[in-house]
Length: 77
Image (cartoon, rainbow, N blue to C red; front, top):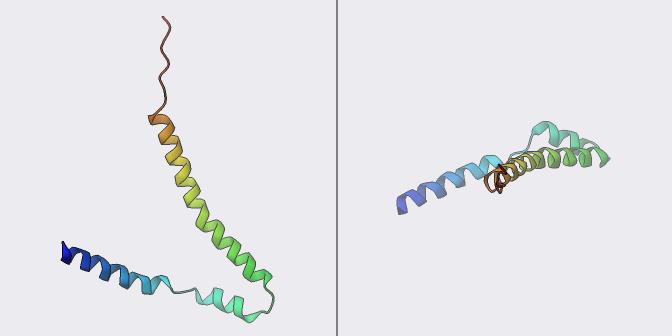
């Protein structure tokens, strides 16, 4: 069990170095100009791209939850 945890910590530690990288083209575009409107637009786009998958997953879970716990109405014969 201790060896398994060690490898997980090692694995996650190695991944964190690659996560901190930034696109060279985005960095050059934002640092070259003094205008902050382009930087704000890129930040808004990143937030939109980040939030959309979470919203979609939340909608799917909500629909599944409603389908699973849906009350069955008694049938009138």
